[in-house]
Image 1 (cartoon, helix red, strand yellow):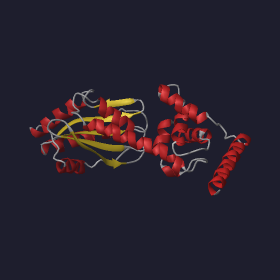
Image 2 (cartoon, helix red, strand yellow):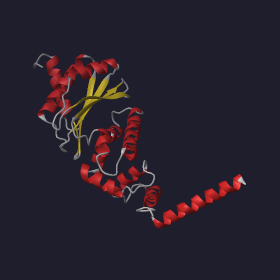
Image 3 (cartoon, helix red, strand yellow):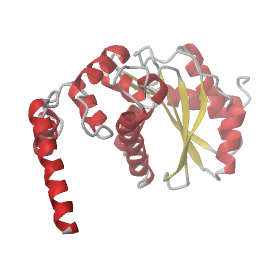
Image 4 (cartoon, helix red, strand yellow):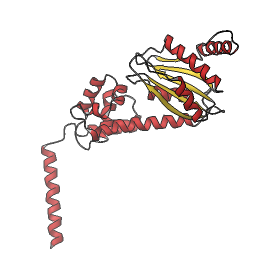
Length: 264
């Protein structure tokens, strides 16, 4: 008898839920499922940026429509990259976005960072810089402030680690040559690559960028460490000190300093 009462109660609640669903369908019902099927079929091909944000927001939102918050987020932060770089606090200022559904955005960004960093750590970098550029484009290109990052290498040019050495303003980041060399020695690094972003979008090095690279190259040389490269990452592409001959010029200048021809 008790079992029958329980079954009858469950049937009544199930029927009630069906009626409620029929009377008040969820706004955009079936839309998120179509988004997911679209992604599983063809990846992000054909997705608008707001749809990418919307899909990420649904990861932490069981039912509520996420289209409008996604559009507002994109309008607020300007680009998909801007949304991905926004803090949880900034995201939560948008109506319809809370800590739970901001989780999707922050999680996917963190996973991508970890994945790209692991790819960098897997193989020697010199002569095979694609993985490093992918990592830098994802991690520092879209930062609102300048970030200076060092990649430490062993004698076989395998990555020992990557450390953010400083974060600055929109136009510059303080670089402490002594700290970079000390960190390299702590890691027993034989070489390093330095990298920073230009939030302005233009990757052209400033006079200060060149001067810092020159000081760092000489400081590394005195400690038996090789500065292989300085990469500047920006929206409009990247600037390689090696590819543009700047690293060779800096090394010639260091040779003259060692020979006593010029002063530091």
